[in-house]
Amino acid sequence: MSESGPRGDAPRHESSSAVGPGCTVAPIALSSAQDVFGLRRTAQQVAAALSMERQDQVRLATALSELGRDRLGCGGLEVSFGLVPPGRPTTLLVTFVWAGGPPPTQETLDLAAKLVGIEYEAGPAGGRIAVSQPLAPETGSAAEQHARLAEVLRATSRSTEADDLRAQTRDLIATLEETLAQREELRRLNEELEETNRGVLALYTELTQELETTNSGVLALHTELEDKRHQLQEASEAKTRFWTNISHELRTPVNSVVALSTLLLAPSSPALTVEQREQVELIGSAGHTLLSLVSDLLDVAKAEAGHLEIHPAPVDLRLLVAHLRGLILSGHGHERVTLVTPRAEEQPPLVTDETLLVRILRNVCANALKFTERGEVRLEIDVDPEPSSPGVLFTVTDTGIGIPPEELDRVFEVFYQVRGPHQRAGLGTGLGLPYARTLAELLGGTLTLTSTVGVGTKVEVRLPDLGHEYTQPSQNRKGGP
Image 1 (cartoon, rainbow, N blue to C red):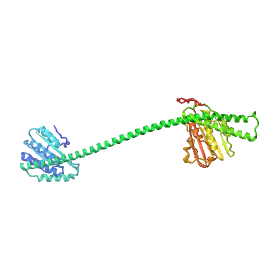
Image 2 (cartoon, rainbow, N blue to C red):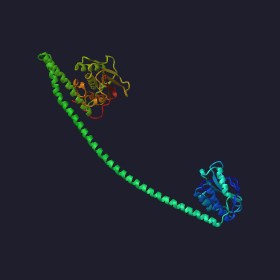
Image 3 (cartoon, rainbow, N blue to C red):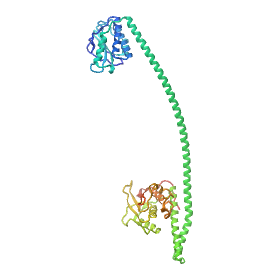
Image 4 (cartoon, rainbow, N blue to C red):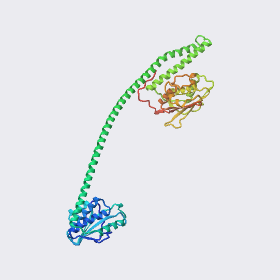
């Protein structure tokens, strides 16, 4: 049978010798109450010599005193002090052995187990109780600890009952003082904790108020932004309606101008002088230009409103290039600029809206010719090398004046034109590139631009092959006039 306390098990020893491991003097016999008083005093001296804390000293002395009183009267009762194990952080081991007598009471064992580590072994003719108390590593080496223990045990003198009572009184007073100090420290800590809690509560209240204020501000800002969004949406819709209406209103007189100029130039009309013919041709050219501008303006409005219909169909790129070349060169006279287009050879297949594709390329090429004084404007058509789906890459490069880096993003703003000396000779509306990009995105593609001032500009238009997978967007689309 064995009992061990919560402070750890003492090392077990099979030997029942009264001399504990590492003991340097003979065991102490316990035969009277006076011997028990001396044991308590010796335990305190040993604990102090081994640099135990004050509380551990009192616990050890109290446990040994209680065990000694309980075992007093047993035959051959002896107690020995020792240090185990050698060569490691050591533990003070106090061993009670007796040859005959009743077993220790459970109450005494439980009390001792609350103070120190104990181990009880019952034998056929007696028993053994081992009390263990670990020592702090900083108390010195094993040799130094053994030397201090031996010195204390050799100097131990017998004490009277009065001495023991005085020692117990001193221990009790020291314990009370320590308890009072701990209580005062606990009271101080409680006050600090209460002060901290008050600060945390104040901070929480302040943060809550700030958060409520911030939330109110965010809500007001959200409401204001929502109002602005509605205003912008209404302004955009008003702008689209204006563009659509003005385009409708302009188309009729412009068509009349174009038709009348065509009639005046017809062979069946009265003969005109050379000067009159030049003037009528100029009127007709300006009418065609104005009609094209009105059509582009109307398409931009319809595209932004989601009313521009897409009509995918297979496109013969060879015929498209020839048609595009005729459109561009018929309205521009560029003696020092060459328009280079792909040769009449097999081109990659493409399914898209041919009308919108022509408008994209016409605007990009016309813009390049407009700002190129000499050199060439080149159109190239290739299979898109890095498409997310099969498609065609259209590249338009020129040797024109180029665009400054800070203006590259702004050229896609509607009605914006790069400021510079070239504007005097090339006035425009600022619709060409934004219109072309809008149509390219409407066809599911992209339009990107790179440029170097004094070197030229390159525009890349990537369009997917819509094929049979194209699905008209679900929103309600209405055809334009």
